[in-house]
Image (cartoon, rainbow, N blue to C red; front, side, top):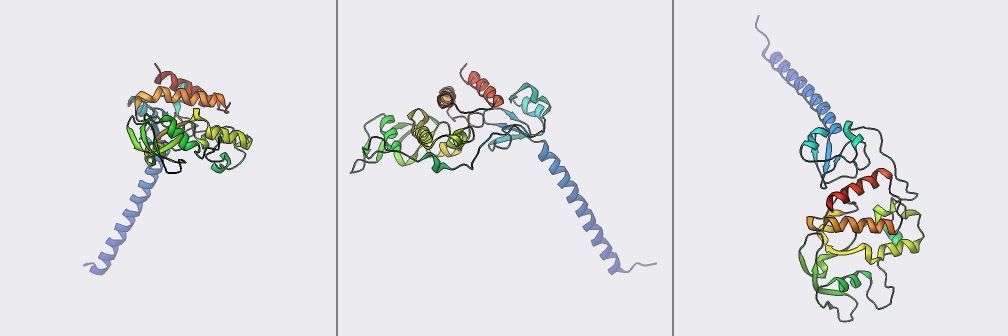
Length: 255
């Protein structure tokens, strides 16, 4: 018996739709499983497993299907017990209030000479005599070594004054509990400030050394040492696991 052509065509269309739906569901399940198993290798070479302390914060990374693949690529474990990639929630870092950059007070002019901290650091770090605006309150040109990239910059507008220990990073480790004057001091402390290219500074963001290191590898040791000095000076509350990783990183970068 001959089949109705119209019925046959409709049945074929329905079969195609069913197969496509099944395939989409399978891919979705597979994709979700893969996403759950991704191990992030940070720019500093650390393999971060899901659920670990820095997993969610690590935004600049190379993904791997599992920890062994990350280690085989030259990555390393933050802690030996991470070998099984545990998935329990990471330790929380207490912050009593939502982060507010304004709580650090902005650039100060402590000596009332009309040069705020940004321009004083530009003046102090220039390798040559700087050029200022007519009233002398802003530095516009000079000769700076960008510590993060190793490049020379001559126009101040191309530079940011980076907080080596980022304000948000400090906020999450005790600065939220400080008095306003201490936060202002921290934000304007020359020990925590470096003139660097705007692009490098924005690439770093609020990351610490475990997530970001300077593109110029020759400065990595000095960078992590300065970072540690500042955290010690201000007695920031660094979780034990993180402190151990920072010590390991310092040893590796300063060998």
